Image (cartoon, rainbow, N blue to C red; front, top):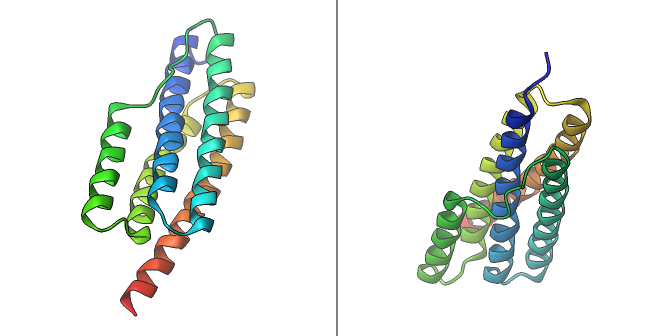
Length: 154
């Protein structure tokens, strides 16, 4: 049984918000880290999420609605928390990595929810492809967090 179009659009708009939150969160993280390799990685992930949001926005438009243009209030709050923690901890790369990992945990959950939905085949393919990259980014950020916590404990 086909999922109603308004439900498909709603799921896509939630993913757009997630991608916009990730785009802004990674951009913010890039501004707070000192390590140039981390900065480059976070900027790359920010650009990736921007492209994902654009792709999802095109699908919502194709489905006859206006897509969401921004992130969620929760994403804005999380970025404010990163800013606050960075200021009180002297902009520790480990702190920023930890917050980026929390943001990626939320992205994985949002994409898992999208993958559980009965999306039409073409839309499902887009979400599945993006989900694969979100999982890769999550694993990469998580591995950085593990490394920084081990080096911080030494």
